[in-house]
Length: 330
View 1 (tube, rainbow, N blue to C red):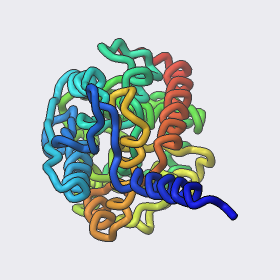
View 2: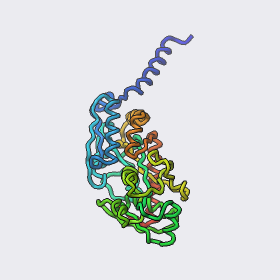
View 3: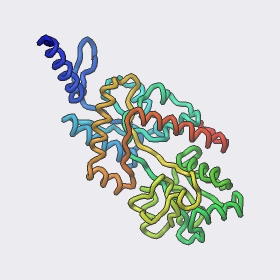
View 4: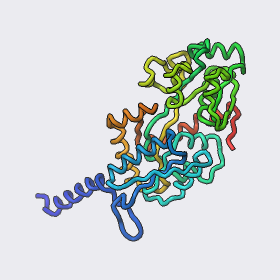
């Protein structure tokens, strides 16, 4: 017969394990407290109103409901997202300061950009939130009506087809460079900085560009530009008749931007796992899916480990593109 004391120890062990999933207790000072013990601050390193801000506010709403206390969003724009990210990287690693980041962080690493923090050493991936699909678009009056036709036109006139982007090393720039390298063509890059390149595309002063779905969809719906293909692995619910680049004649091409949550390195694993679980639960709800898709975003979840692997894969992918195109980030 097994002694009663053994049964009691087993019961206590199981009870403690179950409790760990409902409340997270982490060391803090000389004692332990239940996480979260104060508001969780969401840093959005861009101005209000953009895609990253949309993701940040979704995360804030999800954590407010899950934790029963405010999760305020703080917009800290500046230095192409670096200012806010640096603050999070240097914050206390207790799960109460989070960064709403994008794949631009991986691009910074890939391009060797000088940063005041180390993205891979000072931050830890917590959860993916969404993908931002992009679309290859041309002026409405353009004779180019497919990816195959675009490649053919570019081969017939090397460097004669122009495209606009927000700047050197921007996701839009790298997406087109990847397209050009995959197709074996030469295209003329016109970096616009703060000016909206899409206005010149509409005016037929540019031949083509790759724009995020939220930026392109209004102009597509108004008939001002024509979509050729989407750069993601699958078609967009908002444009079910528009093929992917692979479907339309360029196998192996895929490019997209993700939105994800990061925490300071050293944040307890149980805290990271709880945050990941709460956000995955929110992203599975029909209301959240509808909200994101209405804004041109696709919900996407992953474990912290899978998110970390995606980050590493993106660094490798864009590093190869930048080396091949001799793109250097300052």
